[in-house]
Image (cartoon, rainbow, N blue to C red):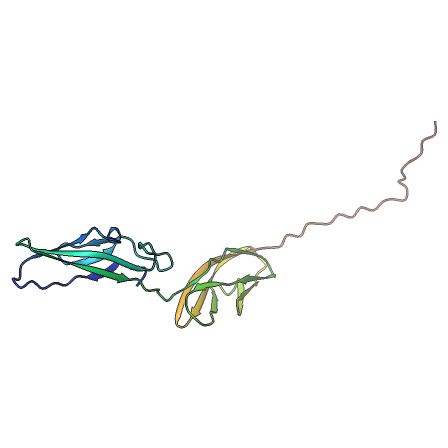
Length: 199
């Protein structure tokens, strides 16, 4: 399975019950693996990613050779294949922090990345329901400010598909509207401009 380092554990029986030493022979994809010389546990140096294979053939089949040696110096070698499978998962795409004016409403679009079949649904929760209200409509998150003061809060969004889920939290800043005063100029009938000058 992808995203984990443990690959296999080599089990060998020696007819003399000798102490065995395990090693990896230089082979196709051997550079990606480490082996415990006492237990035979084989691990990836870096957890594999199914979407970005690094094996020689880029087919998510990692091939190498394991060597087992007893205290008499006798040894046996075996070719090994490790198949990396795609992990079923869903990732809620990044949601940027939001800013909203008081007594206003904004809409945030939600999206996810998944290798599962089916429809993605969303749930959302305001961590302070006195400051904002939220509503999910399909792939849209509607946020409405409730207070007429500057404040901030957080929203947690969950994407769900076939029992798998992912969560992210983002900040919402509520900014009070500032109304600039309007100045209206009124001309006096006694004030006249002289546009013509006689010489």
